[in-house]
Image (tube, rainbow, N blue to C red; front, side, top):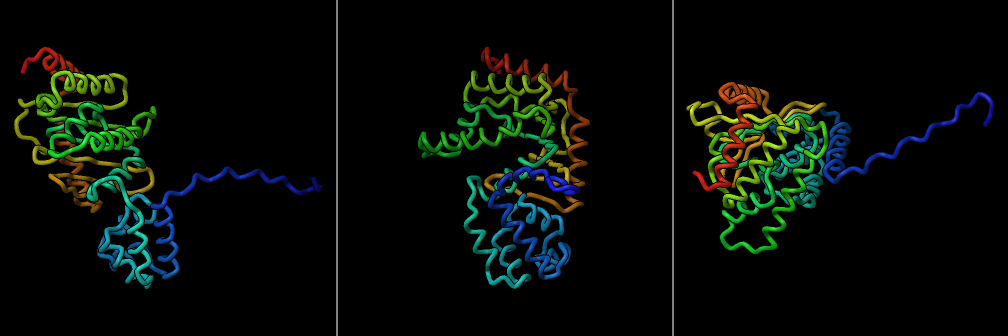
Length: 283
């Protein structure tokens, strides 16, 4: 080695970018070339700067309308709208962005009103859910849906991230989905995860009466490098919110409902008791 010259340390190879990340990077480059801030582009697209940052990070994809507005703002002649058509997803349109965000969240706080959250479902429980609203289903379709849901849940296989809080209405424990055995196994799985420290579990008992989340399920997500989001869902539809006022209101509603819930130990005892009742056919 020549005197005075330092030997370079090889750089670690970068993890390959996903198609969404490539889309977002190109958007950032085109925006920068157009000398627009995220705020300025957001004004032209009619969305928040936070949403533009999620697009550029590859966490979310714009809607077709937003992609067309991006093309108009940047003068890209339909480039982003056409590319968007190639970024297909295996999830329903209203849920695709949520599934992507789950992979990057450092904290997920979820509330379930009537069914077990998808990330916690057993295969048999998920299959029963899918079967309930697909009257002309084929076995292979159900198998594929269950596999997709199982793949989502792999984010919980790590020991630390994301930190998971799960708040359940007591109705989730009482409605028998898939039969007594399936329901008992499902509840035992949730309790096992809580006892293992993989999630924080609380139940809102019927006795607590009205509570702040009784009209909708809710998922809150925090990230290490961007603003938090909130997601609510109804029949065949969902809304992902990043507006600070709505996210803050959702966080407050979650905190209020959590304050009416049982402690973790009391919740665990109730979940185990409900599992035993399903096992023995007591309703």
